[in-house]
Figure 1 (tube, rainbow, N blue to C red):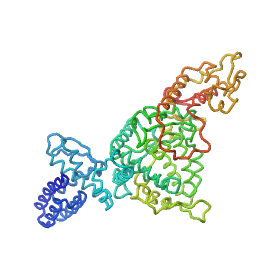
Figure 2 (tube, rainbow, N blue to C red):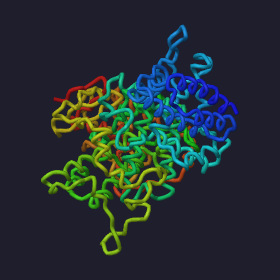
Figure 3 (tube, helix red, strand yellow):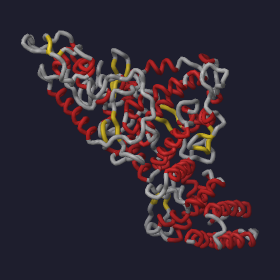
Figure 4 (cartoon, helix red, strand yellow):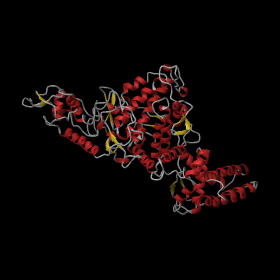
Length: 607
């Protein structure tokens, strides 16, 4: 009753003003609406819909309407420009203030939120403005109204009260409300996505803060549930809809971030830069200033993030999966038809999910913020492919119409029903699969900054450096390994008993293995590296510190609860053998060969 009475009180004030300003408004229409509202015959959304019609009529009567027209559209214009409802609502109050109101909330929750910040009347007027904007700009259908009658106007997720199906349905509804009514144009404007490590400190903080706020208001978890729902319905992965589905999904996630802070864009994680490292597991990507720990429960900006089943955990460089190699991208870009490449791109995408491990391996993988940055890079690769399609190299194929469909007559398996172009997107049923390949996404929604390369000084980032020998950007290591000179040949190790790393498979792959038989003094670089690791030769101080870091990682892992979600992403046939266990051995081997390891404090320029 509170909702209808509040709406009735303010509606009466508005109607009185309309009558005063425009005598031609039919009185019986206003009286009928008042009666319906007072008797709870209309939902809040339906009331607001009628108010929209009412405002339209008054504008045709009097183009100079000084109060209703100005006051009801003032906030709408600001919201439309900023993409969020942060506007000065004090007006007649003494103190000017800015209060954030969620435009997806109903009238009652909106008023409740504003009580104490401004006068009761201002709160009600403001919330009707927000409601008018919502009705005008967001998709509201009969399905929405039916579900609103079932669940109420608030979409807050109550984990202890709702079952999984209800949470899933609410999550879809919440994401739908983020989508603009005209899906071809975002409410928050065009944006450019940059490689994560090229963000300035201020940009990175803004991004982290927006993700944190998205998590705290449950929207982040809604996206994770929608992705899980899509996996369970089989229309998101292992098929033709993989790329278009995730393109639309990422765009709406980014839109949600920008409704919090319009200066934020979704960065991408170019994992080829980490693959170029000697020990990717020690990249700055996984320190506290960036994406948080790579082993165990995640700390830093994303500390205390959890899923519906577990805390957010990672297990990077675990011997399963692998990072993306540039040569694999080059192979994909040789194709001209989407049908010839989408499986290959999904395949290299799977490897990164397994390499990160933990939460990223299961159906709730979208509970890890790295998920969105990884998929943004996959989308970037697809966009590079689409640009090549629309060139002379591919005879100017229109990528916006190149949705692949296979039937029984083709040599490969037929397109699954859920992946057909005219099927609704699983988990985002308010869109069709084919919508995801249309050209408006990168024309109106977003674009990509140039990938870091030696030609652009690796994006002028302090977190990567150009390797002139190989012509690629290499990620910075978080810990300093010291100078190459620290590994100058030691005195003749005549009396030393070295470990023969070729004695067994375990000895070749795990330098910490203690059961390897003793043999003659080390001669090869690999043998000398093993001797350092086993402390048969004195380990340089900086490398010894890295060994301590690795051991601390492993302790954290031992204290982490096991991931309860089943593994979804398939394991690669040729996994990356540069694991966390081999990190020190790999570093020592490289440095014995004279390779410089760039870190925050050393070798910031390899030229």
